[in-house]
Length: 112
Image (cartoon, rainbow, N blue to C red; front, side, top):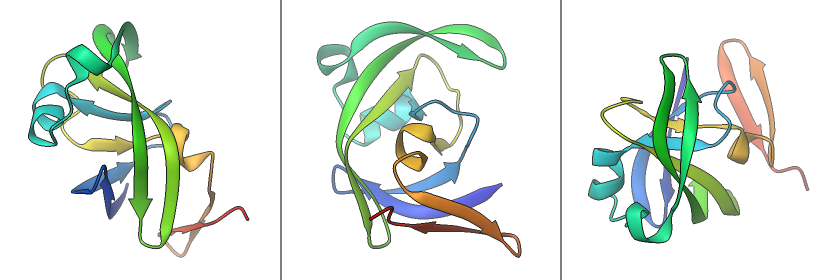
């Protein structure tokens, strides 16, 4: 498991890097605390999780920033209920940066 501090939409967030997650994902409570009006701005969808299918909302995050790396227009998802317990830094962010594991540390860098 890899933890990293970052921000999205200017709000500080503790992310759990999750290569198995399609997008940046969070639960409803996390979205509310971060001021994301997902029911208005999001599009209803069904998310497939380890626990089965769950109602969710697809959202677009203007900016996700980890250290000096900023990625604009990142797809996200808000899942109904209390899961995931952590904000997942999924492939909608990770696929747009270069990343590798080195000595137990996840290294992120720009693809440019």
